Structure formats: structure tokens, C-alpha cells
Length: 201
Image (cartoon, rainbow, N blue to C red):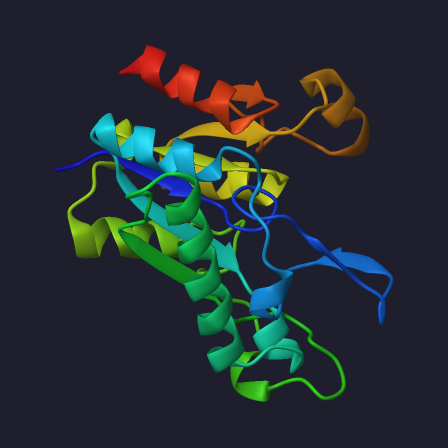
């Protein structure tokens, strides 16, 4: 069984974009909106050298909401792959899982993707499915992301967890209940995340 590195996409590998229609930061919906978090390609390439199987796990509720199509999502992933390889030749993921679901997408949403599901983070379904399909050892694996839901999904799957944020954990606790979501490590950059992972090998 192989150890894996489960990686959130938006805010971890690529930057969020401003959605002027809703006044929020959201996932990129077009290839021209995709830009890398600095060091993302290097992070993937070096993590692979450490022997990790690399899995992207991302919530994409825009599909349920009717604001994102599956072909658009594919084009975003193709552009992300190109940028990663441009930054660090050979940087790539081994598998990618996305959740198109949302519990209540609202008017104009797609009913087939409406509802509660175990494959939408903070539930661990995407990680468990990847582990079953690729013979992954969850106890030796990591989940890294910029959100509390990433930490929760990782913990529920039995992985070690890294929260990517510039805030200290004490500051995070002021805004969130971390009783089921306290990460094993808090880091401010992907380079620091890699250092933690390397030290733990």
C-alpha cells in the first residue's frame, strides 16, 4: 500500500477568483482565470520524489448550482496541469476526484447533484474512494488544504492533516469550532508544508 498526499485545489494549488455576480471569492470557471499559488508545481514534483501518490480532492458545487459545466471544469483542470508543468517540469497529479454536489443549490440548480453526500468535504468519501481504487495507506497519508473542511475530511479518513493559512491556530479558533478539525500542522506556504512532510518521512 502506498502513502498518498490528498490535496485541495482552490486556494491550495490555484488562486481563487472574484465572482462579481455574488460578491465572493470562488473557483475559477474558465482556463483564463486559472493562476497558480506560487510553488505549487515544485510542491507536487518534490512530494512525488518523496514517494507520495498525489490525489487532488476538490468540492465543485458550481456544477450543482448550474454555474459550472463539466466541460468547463475539464478545461480548468487542463489549464492547471499546464501551469504546474510550466513551473516545474514533470509536476503532475496521479488522480483527481471532484464532488459536484451541494445540499441546497437554489433556483436554477441541477437536481441530480442536490443533496447530502459522503463525497463532499468535510465528509471523507473522495479520500476513501481514492484509497480503495489505488491501494493507498490512509494512516501514512496526508490531507492538505486551506479550509477547515479539508482538515475534517482528512481526519475522518484517518490521515494526518496540514492547514495552509497565514493565521496562527489560535486565530483560527476564534472563528471556528475546531473540536473535530484541529490540524496536525499549520503552515503558511506550500514550501513549509513540504518541509513538514519531509521531516515526517
